[in-house]
Length: 339
Ligand SMILES: Cc1cc2nc3c(=O)[nH]c(=O)nc-3n(C[C@H](O)[C@H](O)[C@H](O)COP(=O)(O)OP(=O)(O)OC[C@H]3O[C@@H](n4cnc5c(N)ncnc54)[C@H](O)[C@@H]3O)c2cc1C
Image 1: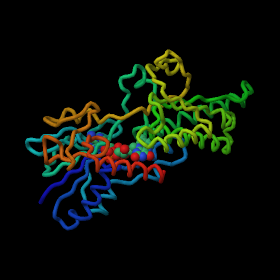
Image 2: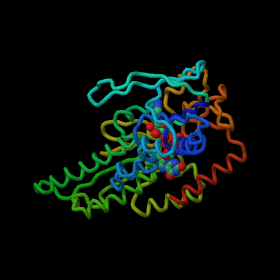
Image 3: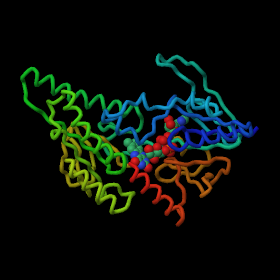
Protein backbone atom coordinates (compact mmCIF):
# COMPACT_ATOMS: atom_id res chain seq x y z
CA UNK A 1 0.00 0.00 0.00
CA UNK A 2 1.24 3.54 -0.78
CA UNK A 3 2.61 5.18 2.37
CA UNK A 4 1.97 8.90 2.87
CA UNK A 5 3.66 10.58 5.83
CA UNK A 6 2.70 14.15 6.78
CA UNK A 7 5.11 15.80 9.23
CA UNK A 8 3.51 18.65 11.20
CA UNK A 9 -0.13 18.74 12.30
CA UNK A 10 -0.47 22.52 12.33
CA UNK A 11 -2.78 24.82 10.37
CA UNK A 12 -1.84 23.17 7.07
CA UNK A 13 -0.78 19.62 7.95
CA UNK A 14 -3.74 18.78 10.17
CA UNK A 15 -6.26 19.71 7.49
CA UNK A 16 -4.34 17.74 4.88
CA UNK A 17 -3.85 14.58 6.93
CA UNK A 18 -7.49 14.61 8.01
CA UNK A 19 -8.70 14.81 4.40
CA UNK A 20 -6.22 12.17 3.24
CA UNK A 21 -7.30 9.88 6.09
CA UNK A 22 -11.00 10.30 5.27
CA UNK A 23 -10.43 9.57 1.58
CA UNK A 24 -7.40 7.33 0.95
CA UNK A 25 -6.96 6.02 4.51
CA UNK A 26 -10.55 4.97 5.04
CA UNK A 27 -10.76 3.16 1.68
CA UNK A 28 -7.35 1.59 2.37
CA UNK A 29 -5.86 2.97 -0.83
CA UNK A 30 -2.99 4.44 1.21
CA UNK A 31 -1.56 4.26 4.70
CA UNK A 32 -1.66 7.81 6.04
CA UNK A 33 0.54 8.84 8.99
CA UNK A 34 0.87 12.11 10.89
CA UNK A 35 4.12 12.88 12.68
CA UNK A 36 4.07 15.73 15.20
CA UNK A 37 6.27 16.59 18.16
CA UNK A 38 3.22 17.59 20.24
CA UNK A 39 0.26 15.49 21.36
CA UNK A 40 -2.29 18.20 20.59
CA UNK A 41 -2.94 20.97 18.07
CA UNK A 42 -3.82 24.54 18.99
CA UNK A 43 -4.44 26.80 15.99
CA UNK A 44 -1.50 29.20 16.06
CA UNK A 45 -3.49 32.39 15.36
CA UNK A 46 -5.12 31.84 18.77
CA UNK A 47 -1.83 32.13 20.67
CA UNK A 48 -2.18 35.87 21.30
CA UNK A 49 -5.49 35.18 23.06
CA UNK A 50 -3.82 32.57 25.26
CA UNK A 51 -1.00 35.04 26.00
CA UNK A 52 -3.47 37.76 27.01
CA UNK A 53 -5.40 35.32 29.18
CA UNK A 54 -8.63 35.56 27.17
CA UNK A 55 -8.51 31.95 25.97
CA UNK A 56 -7.87 28.72 27.84
CA UNK A 57 -5.47 26.69 25.65
CA UNK A 58 -6.44 23.31 27.06
CA UNK A 59 -10.12 23.83 26.20
CA UNK A 60 -9.31 24.65 22.58
CA UNK A 61 -6.74 22.01 21.70
CA UNK A 62 -7.40 19.12 19.39
CA UNK A 63 -6.03 15.76 20.47
CA UNK A 64 -3.98 14.10 17.70
CA UNK A 65 -4.65 10.54 18.95
CA UNK A 66 -8.41 11.07 18.84
CA UNK A 67 -8.29 12.91 15.50
CA UNK A 68 -6.26 10.03 14.03
CA UNK A 69 -8.73 7.42 15.27
CA UNK A 70 -11.77 9.33 13.93
CA UNK A 71 -10.15 10.06 10.55
CA UNK A 72 -8.33 6.86 9.65
CA UNK A 73 -4.69 7.87 9.99
CA UNK A 74 -1.85 6.88 12.31
CA UNK A 75 -0.18 9.32 14.70
CA UNK A 76 3.51 9.20 15.73
CA UNK A 77 6.09 11.57 17.35
CA UNK A 78 8.97 13.99 16.49
CA UNK A 79 10.87 13.94 13.18
CA UNK A 80 14.63 14.16 13.56
CA UNK A 81 16.07 13.06 10.23
CA UNK A 82 15.13 12.30 6.61
CA UNK A 83 16.99 9.60 4.70
CA UNK A 84 16.02 10.41 1.11
CA UNK A 85 17.95 7.63 -0.58
CA UNK A 86 16.01 4.95 1.35
CA UNK A 87 12.79 7.03 1.55
CA UNK A 88 12.74 6.69 5.31
CA UNK A 89 12.41 9.15 8.21
CA UNK A 90 13.82 8.86 11.70
CA UNK A 91 11.72 9.73 14.74
CA UNK A 92 13.24 10.97 17.98
CA UNK A 93 13.10 8.83 21.10
CA UNK A 94 10.13 9.52 23.36
CA UNK A 95 11.38 10.70 26.77
CA UNK A 96 9.15 11.14 29.81
CA UNK A 97 9.13 14.10 32.27
CA UNK A 98 11.82 12.47 34.42
CA UNK A 99 14.16 11.88 31.46
CA UNK A 100 13.48 8.15 31.11
CA UNK A 101 13.30 6.80 27.56
CA UNK A 102 9.84 5.38 26.86
CA UNK A 103 10.30 4.60 23.15
CA UNK A 104 13.73 4.48 21.46
CA UNK A 105 14.49 6.23 18.16
CA UNK A 106 12.81 4.44 15.25
CA UNK A 107 12.39 4.78 11.50
CA UNK A 108 9.35 4.71 9.24
CA UNK A 109 9.27 4.35 5.46
CA UNK A 110 7.41 6.62 3.08
CA UNK A 111 6.48 6.74 -0.59
CA UNK A 112 5.29 10.35 -0.32
CA UNK A 113 6.53 12.70 2.39
CA UNK A 114 4.88 16.04 3.15
CA UNK A 115 6.75 18.51 5.36
CA UNK A 116 4.50 21.07 7.08
CA UNK A 117 6.58 21.82 10.18
CA UNK A 118 5.77 25.53 10.33
CA UNK A 119 8.16 28.23 11.47
CA UNK A 120 9.72 29.78 14.54
CA UNK A 121 10.31 33.44 15.36
CA UNK A 122 13.26 35.00 13.58
CA UNK A 123 15.37 37.22 15.85
CA UNK A 124 17.61 38.21 12.89
CA UNK A 125 20.52 37.61 15.31
CA UNK A 126 19.68 40.90 17.07
CA UNK A 127 21.85 41.03 20.23
CA UNK A 128 20.01 40.22 23.48
CA UNK A 129 16.72 39.27 21.85
CA UNK A 130 16.86 35.48 22.27
CA UNK A 131 17.74 35.92 25.98
CA UNK A 132 15.36 38.69 26.96
CA UNK A 133 12.33 38.68 24.69
CA UNK A 134 9.29 36.42 24.67
CA UNK A 135 8.47 34.64 21.41
CA UNK A 136 4.96 33.41 20.65
CA UNK A 137 5.74 30.16 18.87
CA UNK A 138 3.94 27.57 20.98
CA UNK A 139 1.09 27.33 23.50
CA UNK A 140 3.78 26.93 26.17
CA UNK A 141 5.32 30.32 25.18
CA UNK A 142 1.88 31.93 25.31
CA UNK A 143 1.17 30.43 28.74
CA UNK A 144 4.53 31.68 30.01
CA UNK A 145 3.73 35.22 28.85
CA UNK A 146 0.29 35.08 30.47
CA UNK A 147 1.78 33.95 33.80
CA UNK A 148 4.39 36.70 33.72
CA UNK A 149 1.78 39.34 33.01
CA UNK A 150 -0.42 38.08 35.82
CA UNK A 151 2.56 38.12 38.18
CA UNK A 152 3.09 41.83 37.37
CA UNK A 153 -0.51 42.50 38.36
CA UNK A 154 -0.34 40.39 41.52
CA UNK A 155 2.92 42.02 42.64
CA UNK A 156 1.45 45.52 42.08
CA UNK A 157 -1.66 44.46 43.96
CA UNK A 158 0.36 43.15 46.88
CA UNK A 159 2.50 46.33 47.04
CA UNK A 160 -0.64 48.44 47.11
CA UNK A 161 -2.22 46.29 49.85
CA UNK A 162 0.87 46.86 51.96
CA UNK A 163 0.26 50.60 51.30
CA UNK A 164 3.75 50.97 49.99
CA UNK A 165 2.70 52.34 46.67
CA UNK A 166 -0.35 53.58 44.83
CA UNK A 167 -1.32 52.58 41.30
CA UNK A 168 1.45 51.35 39.01
CA UNK A 169 2.00 50.94 35.27
CA UNK A 170 3.24 48.06 33.17
CA UNK A 171 5.09 48.80 29.92
CA UNK A 172 4.87 46.19 27.19
CA UNK A 173 6.85 46.49 23.97
CA UNK A 174 5.95 44.33 20.99
CA UNK A 175 8.45 44.29 18.15
CA UNK A 176 6.89 43.37 14.80
CA UNK A 177 3.60 44.74 13.51
CA UNK A 178 2.54 41.73 11.46
CA UNK A 179 -0.52 39.64 12.31
CA UNK A 180 1.01 38.35 15.58
CA UNK A 181 2.06 41.75 16.94
CA UNK A 182 -1.10 43.60 15.91
CA UNK A 183 -3.44 40.93 17.28
CA UNK A 184 -1.48 40.65 20.52
CA UNK A 185 -1.50 44.43 21.08
CA UNK A 186 -5.27 44.64 20.57
CA UNK A 187 -5.93 41.58 22.75
CA UNK A 188 -3.79 42.95 25.58
CA UNK A 189 -5.74 46.21 25.57
CA UNK A 190 -8.90 44.18 25.95
CA UNK A 191 -7.29 42.09 28.72
CA UNK A 192 -6.30 45.24 30.65
CA UNK A 193 -10.00 46.06 31.09
CA UNK A 194 -10.77 42.48 32.10
CA UNK A 195 -8.07 42.41 34.79
CA UNK A 196 -9.63 45.46 36.44
CA UNK A 197 -13.05 43.80 36.39
CA UNK A 198 -11.59 40.80 38.21
CA UNK A 199 -10.35 43.08 40.98
CA UNK A 200 -6.75 43.45 39.80
CA UNK A 201 -7.07 47.23 39.60
CA UNK A 202 -3.71 48.26 41.05
CA UNK A 203 -2.71 48.72 37.39
CA UNK A 204 -5.50 50.79 35.80
CA UNK A 205 -6.49 49.72 32.25
CA UNK A 206 -4.82 52.81 30.76
CA UNK A 207 -1.65 52.09 32.72
CA UNK A 208 -1.00 48.97 30.69
CA UNK A 209 1.12 50.86 28.16
CA UNK A 210 1.65 49.02 24.93
CA UNK A 211 4.13 50.04 22.25
CA UNK A 212 3.98 48.27 18.89
CA UNK A 213 7.23 48.76 17.02
CA UNK A 214 8.12 47.95 13.42
CA UNK A 215 11.04 48.77 11.16
CA UNK A 216 8.71 49.10 8.17
CA UNK A 217 6.58 52.13 7.32
CA UNK A 218 3.21 50.53 8.20
CA UNK A 219 1.51 47.83 10.26
CA UNK A 220 0.35 44.58 8.60
CA UNK A 221 2.72 44.99 5.63
CA UNK A 222 1.36 41.81 3.99
CA UNK A 223 -2.07 43.38 3.57
CA UNK A 224 -3.27 46.31 1.46
CA UNK A 225 -2.34 49.87 2.42
CA UNK A 226 -6.04 50.56 3.12
CA UNK A 227 -6.42 47.69 5.64
CA UNK A 228 -3.08 48.61 7.17
CA UNK A 229 -4.12 52.27 7.68
CA UNK A 230 -7.44 51.35 9.25
CA UNK A 231 -5.77 48.77 11.56
CA UNK A 232 -3.24 51.40 12.66
CA UNK A 233 -6.00 53.96 13.29
CA UNK A 234 -7.95 51.38 15.34
CA UNK A 235 -4.86 50.55 17.42
CA UNK A 236 -4.18 54.22 18.12
CA UNK A 237 -7.82 54.73 19.06
CA UNK A 238 -7.63 52.02 21.74
CA UNK A 239 -4.42 53.51 23.16
CA UNK A 240 -1.65 51.44 21.58
CA UNK A 241 1.43 53.50 20.71
CA UNK A 242 2.41 52.54 17.16
CA UNK A 243 6.03 53.26 16.23
CA UNK A 244 6.64 52.50 12.56
CA UNK A 245 9.95 53.03 10.69
CA UNK A 246 11.64 52.22 14.00
CA UNK A 247 14.42 49.67 13.79
CA UNK A 248 15.45 47.85 17.00
CA UNK A 249 19.17 47.12 16.99
CA UNK A 250 19.67 45.69 20.45
CA UNK A 251 17.98 44.53 23.62
CA UNK A 252 19.76 45.52 26.81
CA UNK A 253 18.82 45.30 30.50
CA UNK A 254 17.37 48.83 30.12
CA UNK A 255 15.05 48.05 27.25
CA UNK A 256 14.98 48.02 23.47
CA UNK A 257 17.51 50.22 21.74
CA UNK A 258 16.63 51.73 18.35
CA UNK A 259 19.07 52.29 15.48
CA UNK A 260 19.20 55.96 16.51
CA UNK A 261 20.24 54.94 20.04
CA UNK A 262 16.91 55.72 21.73
CA UNK A 263 16.03 53.31 24.55
CA UNK A 264 12.40 52.17 24.76
CA UNK A 265 11.89 50.93 28.32
CA UNK A 266 9.61 47.97 28.87
CA UNK A 267 9.26 45.36 31.58
CA UNK A 268 7.77 42.87 29.12
CA UNK A 269 9.14 42.51 25.62
CA UNK A 270 7.68 40.38 22.86
CA UNK A 271 9.58 39.72 19.64
CA UNK A 272 7.30 38.96 16.69
CA UNK A 273 9.32 40.55 13.91
CA UNK A 274 9.38 37.73 11.41
CA UNK A 275 9.69 34.01 10.93
CA UNK A 276 12.21 31.44 9.79
CA UNK A 277 11.80 27.73 9.11
CA UNK A 278 13.20 25.15 11.57
CA UNK A 279 16.96 24.82 11.06
CA UNK A 280 16.95 21.04 10.62
CA UNK A 281 15.32 21.46 7.18
CA UNK A 282 18.57 22.95 5.89
CA UNK A 283 20.38 19.80 6.93
CA UNK A 284 18.23 17.39 4.95
CA UNK A 285 20.64 16.00 2.44
CA UNK A 286 20.19 17.55 -1.01
CA UNK A 287 17.10 19.69 -0.41
CA UNK A 288 17.24 23.37 -1.28
CA UNK A 289 16.38 26.11 1.26
CA UNK A 290 16.15 29.91 0.96
CA UNK A 291 17.67 32.57 3.27
CA UNK A 292 14.86 31.97 5.81
CA UNK A 293 15.56 28.23 5.87
CA UNK A 294 12.31 27.47 3.98
CA UNK A 295 12.32 24.54 1.57
CA UNK A 296 12.13 25.68 -2.01
CA UNK A 297 9.18 24.06 -3.77
CA UNK A 298 7.72 24.16 -7.28
CA UNK A 299 4.15 25.33 -7.90
CA UNK A 300 3.12 21.65 -7.41
CA UNK A 301 4.54 21.97 -3.82
CA UNK A 302 7.12 19.29 -4.66
CA UNK A 303 10.57 20.21 -3.40
CA UNK A 304 12.85 21.37 -6.18
CA UNK A 305 15.23 18.40 -5.91
CA UNK A 306 12.94 15.55 -4.82
CA UNK A 307 9.48 15.02 -6.31
CA UNK A 308 8.48 12.54 -3.56
CA UNK A 309 8.92 15.21 -0.87
CA UNK A 310 6.36 18.00 -0.71
CA UNK A 311 6.40 21.04 1.58
CA UNK A 312 3.85 23.75 2.30
CA UNK A 313 2.85 26.37 4.85
CA UNK A 314 5.36 28.51 6.73
CA UNK A 315 8.25 26.07 6.14
CA UNK A 316 8.05 26.31 2.34
CA UNK A 317 8.98 28.93 -0.28
CA UNK A 318 6.72 28.65 -3.30
CA UNK A 319 7.38 30.64 -6.48
CA UNK A 320 4.64 33.20 -6.97
CA UNK A 321 3.19 33.56 -10.45
CA UNK A 322 0.45 36.06 -11.19
CA UNK A 323 -2.40 33.64 -10.31
CA UNK A 324 -0.72 32.62 -7.06
CA UNK A 325 -0.26 36.28 -6.15
CA UNK A 326 -3.96 37.02 -6.74
CA UNK A 327 -5.10 33.94 -4.78
CA UNK A 328 -2.69 34.77 -1.94
CA UNK A 329 -3.91 38.35 -1.70
CA UNK A 330 -7.57 37.23 -1.75
CA UNK A 331 -6.94 34.64 0.99
CA UNK A 332 -5.06 37.14 3.16
CA UNK A 333 -7.79 39.75 2.72
CA UNK A 334 -10.55 37.26 3.57
CA UNK A 335 -8.63 36.04 6.64
CA UNK A 336 -8.18 39.62 7.79
CA UNK A 337 -11.83 40.50 7.31
CA UNK A 338 -13.00 37.39 9.18
CA UNK A 339 -10.54 38.20 11.96
C1 LIG B 1 -0.27 34.93 17.50
C2 LIG B 1 -0.34 34.61 16.03
C3 LIG B 1 -1.35 35.16 15.25
C4 LIG B 1 -1.42 34.84 13.89
N1 LIG B 1 -2.43 35.39 13.16
C5 LIG B 1 -2.53 35.10 11.84
C6 LIG B 1 -3.57 35.64 11.04
O1 LIG B 1 -4.41 36.40 11.52
N2 LIG B 1 -3.63 35.32 9.72
C7 LIG B 1 -2.70 34.47 9.15
O2 LIG B 1 -2.79 34.18 7.95
N3 LIG B 1 -1.70 33.93 9.89
C8 LIG B 1 -1.59 34.22 11.20
N4 LIG B 1 -0.56 33.68 11.92
C9 LIG B 1 0.40 32.80 11.23
C10 LIG B 1 -0.18 31.38 11.10
O3 LIG B 1 -0.46 30.87 12.39
C11 LIG B 1 0.83 30.46 10.40
O4 LIG B 1 1.07 31.02 9.12
C12 LIG B 1 0.31 29.04 10.25
O5 LIG B 1 0.07 28.44 11.53
C13 LIG B 1 1.33 28.18 9.50
O6 LIG B 1 0.81 26.89 9.36
P1 LIG B 1 1.77 25.65 9.16
O7 LIG B 1 0.89 24.46 8.95
O8 LIG B 1 2.80 25.96 8.14
O9 LIG B 1 2.57 25.50 10.54
P2 LIG B 1 2.06 25.45 12.05
O10 LIG B 1 0.64 25.77 12.17
O11 LIG B 1 3.05 26.27 12.83
O12 LIG B 1 2.27 23.91 12.44
C14 LIG B 1 3.54 23.29 12.46
C15 LIG B 1 3.41 21.95 13.16
O13 LIG B 1 4.63 21.22 12.97
C16 LIG B 1 4.99 20.59 14.19
N5 LIG B 1 6.43 20.35 14.17
C17 LIG B 1 7.43 21.27 14.13
N6 LIG B 1 8.63 20.66 14.09
C18 LIG B 1 8.40 19.33 14.09
C19 LIG B 1 9.23 18.16 14.05
N7 LIG B 1 10.57 18.25 14.00
N8 LIG B 1 8.65 16.94 14.10
C20 LIG B 1 7.31 16.84 14.13
N9 LIG B 1 6.47 17.90 14.17
C21 LIG B 1 7.01 19.12 14.15
C22 LIG B 1 4.51 21.55 15.27
O14 LIG B 1 4.32 20.90 16.51
C23 LIG B 1 3.19 22.06 14.67
O15 LIG B 1 2.10 21.25 15.04
C24 LIG B 1 -0.45 33.98 13.28
C25 LIG B 1 0.56 33.43 14.06
C26 LIG B 1 0.63 33.73 15.42
C27 LIG B 1 1.74 33.13 16.24
